[in-house]
Length: 203
Image (tube, rainbow, N blue to C red; front, side, top):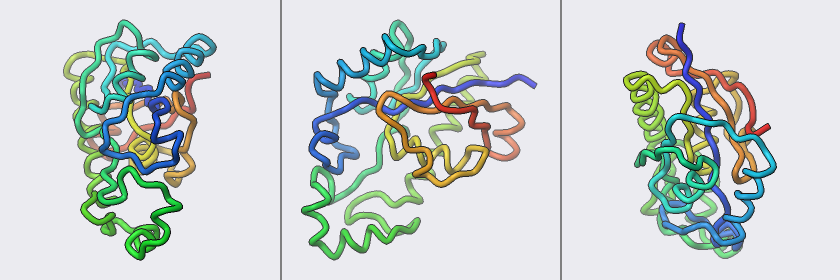
């Protein structure tokens, strides 16, 4: 049965990362240092050559895709955007820890969103919608190897929810500019909403 490969990567560094801020829907670009780090990675490692890249609409992801997948068509996938952290957006943990609402949010749960933010259940639905649309588009257009450029939270939860072998989200945490290679067949996705996790990339 025909298999489809997807190289799923985490975007590069932003000012929010440097400052330890909760940055989800906020549309920050890469820093100049972040761009240079990705260029260095591209020069040092063998990144996969793909036929199409599906990217989060946020600028930091699009810029990362342009660096790590040069000369490749980029298709924007809205559901690949990072989690909306609501009133916690743009704030550091050391400031938020004083708030009861933040401490309650840290307890977790599928239906325990940050105030005015997105719940984990909503994020998981988005992860499914994004992967379903991407896999169906690949099958429809005969794309056998695609890239995905997204955010840490989306990457970890997508792999945890739908990937085999099963692992907790934090076990898929990776450095910026790195990610995972997955393989999916029509049967795996249509009958079980699963894909096989082949390993970390780049090598």
